[in-house]
Length: 168
Figure 1 (tube, rainbow, N blue to C red):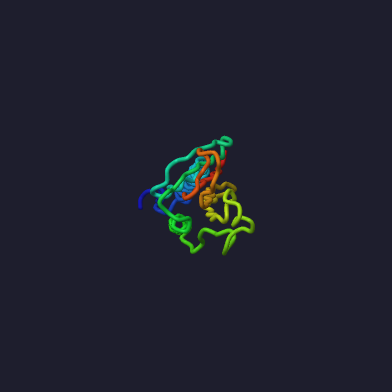
Figure 2: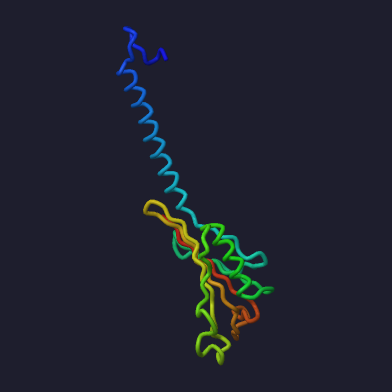
């Protein structure tokens, strides 16, 4: 390559060094740009698609970096909804971790006699992490409970809460 050959016909160390410096600077600039692009991708919520037949029930922006969304499902059981989110979690993480049922079996003591107390729930944690930054969406799935207020009565339905947190 004549670009690297000096006037005397030998390889010019100055020209080779200049080329290496230019390539090095380009790599550093590219790395810094990739870092900032990655950091910027954490400045929005980690959105997880709601259960297919879920109807929005409300949304609360708790701060500029947290949000809660509520959904109601009338044609499914909590275990079916949890299985849907298990699949979504596996697609994101590519691991076998899934939603956790609380309590693992049975119901919470006292809920048998109190129709307004949640007997059990599932918790699913969707998380993305980077260099000192993270996004997370915690999804809580529970059977609906009885309430005297018709706007709050979710008996016979499944309640899904998406609680999201991201970087400022």
